[in-house]
Image 1 (tube, rainbow, N blue to C red):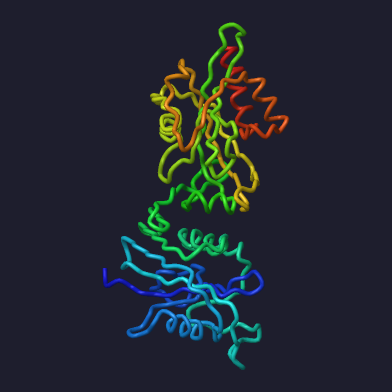
Image 2 (cartoon, rainbow, N blue to C red):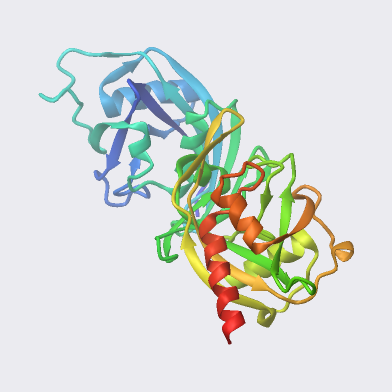
Length: 353
């Protein structure tokens, strides 16, 4: 597949925008028809900074006066040679007289140049892995090492500073996968719609005859809604995984309940909407398509094996009381009311069978 490539890439900034290049100039370009920053291959004997300055001048007509080395990105692919990319952001620059068009932008032989709002960049046709390092740039993360592995154009593996990132598919409002993939942090930072699987563990109180729900108390170390009561078990559906296997896995990992597929009853699906909160000083978007399941087999609380890093405890609560907490926006609970409404309909139908 050829020798390993050594490249640079720079996102030049101005007034909340990046200077982006729509790569349309080369037919045999791996980035054909995608939007990327400014960069190219390091030539024999060049330093990364020499390559950076040369590529910026050649592709934009600008002389870069200020830049910052932000990270190393390692790419692997089943179609292209491995690549090590030095990632930069650029600040001040100088424009040479007569170097631009009437609109002010350089006529780049590689494609079309355009100043673009940083958030709009993520909505363009870009590589899925680019969203991850664009998020790191936006968060002003310290110098990082990011590895991205592709099968064709599909991102199949990502690791940040040696730690594998959890990847899952992005989806449409009906749950249909879009064909794009991202990591957990990027989806929640930018409100990208993704699928989850939720399981309600329920029982009927023998004395009152009322349905009770098993709530889990989220660990105080969680990066979102720490210490709040939530659905019995829930989690993201991994990239390439179906909802039911994900529900079974989460139930086992979080509570130690080993369920068979036929023991989980599908209750429905809902769009959470874009729920915005803030944790650790950063915005957190919870925009999920959630598949809801119900587990009715007897559960002995003392036999549960709680996942320490995820769950601090559990609590049985009557359905009506739990619903009242959510309607009152009680801060001790973070369950979505749509999930409870779907469960309520399931329990109603269960009673009328």
